[in-house]
Length: 458
Ligand code: NAD
Image 1 (cartoon, helix red, strand yellow):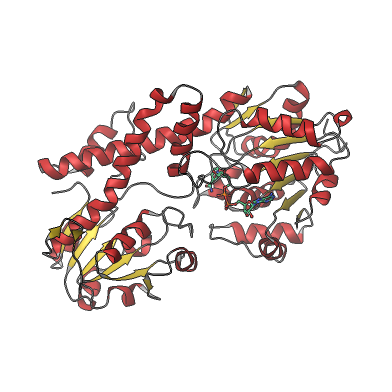
Image 2 (cartoon, protein in one colour):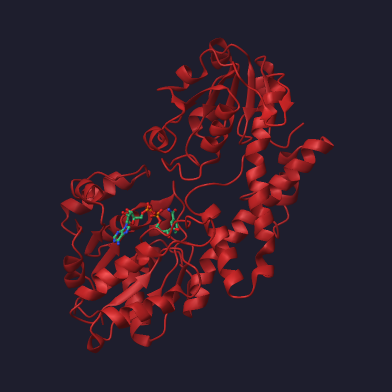
């Protein structure tokens, strides 16, 4: 039975970024009473007035509906959180440390300490942020130090697999739920905290697999999943590199190997590589943690995965030089005087997230090589302007491509995939296109007079 005595525990989500805000809103939608907590006053004020601070399809409407229904509140006050919640989910950021390797756990620490200090009754603290294995045990120690011992506050772990752009669906209809627990009490309470998801699945004649395990496994599941996905992308990008010198077509290769169900065709698109706030930092932090634990050798291949990924960015730069007939010096190619349109700033479509986006990294390389770079993105402009203020941004696709000597499509937004090569061709100075996501139809663009170059394609 939930400690509050209600059929459903009351939930708090500590940290209302992409992860926490989506969760808070979706779990209110599932019928829970929810409090979202963040230290960012502006973010909390926005959410409380019905504004989602990032772009995620479908989330605005759910936010407004659940605010109106009175099931959802937002606060910056940890005392409020401690009084309200039966189950507290830690959703704060765990960015890459300044030294490059390892995860920065200072936000996790401050959220746990803040909460623990204010607790006046037994509660469950559940980690959701992506962390190095061993963090749950450390949080137990923090709670032991900062919460009154007689309360018997417990800790559990439940890693998160949502994908930005599909986050609402992923939270309401996850393909699995993983929990790391130490007691029947925490197991039961965590089940109650997820019952809305299981109930929804039952009404839709689906099942959501539930994996109940220990702390270490639960923590490792997340980083292992991300390591696998990163490896799959770098594998096909490595094949793209080979295709580029051998004259093969990696898109056909991927299709052909993907028919084997042991391989599968998803996440097998060669391109400018992965980015975002998760995969790059998570594979680095995973290596650093394995090293600390004495298993560094086991994950040495992830270093190679990272290098393959970063080489895709230089590949676009070199391809641009080739297409523009520029020679490469010791400092790389000189692109001065060339006007280049960069289409895409986010790390993937249907998101406004520009964290470690390959598109912006490539735009930066082109700029550094002397090009006049014009960037356009349907949703990521505000974030991109803050993160990369030295780039020039254009308000529309047409403005970005106007008078360009070269067009680079670096995020596969539908607007770009569906762009008409004839219409775009009328605006540019030179009909040359680099399709960094292999998302355009080469035949269509070639027929319209474009010199087309994809990734790993002849
Ligand atoms: P984010 O940067 O969007 O959000 C983090 C939020 O935490 C910010 O709003 C920040 O103000 C807040 N915060 C910092 N310190 C706080 C404190 N002491 N108390 C309350 N709030 C505090 O990050 P995100 O993308 O939501 O990621 C959060 C975690 O979830 C990370 O560990 C990430 O790896 C993991 N994750 C993210 C995704 C994703 O798709 N974004 C998916 C799965 C897991």
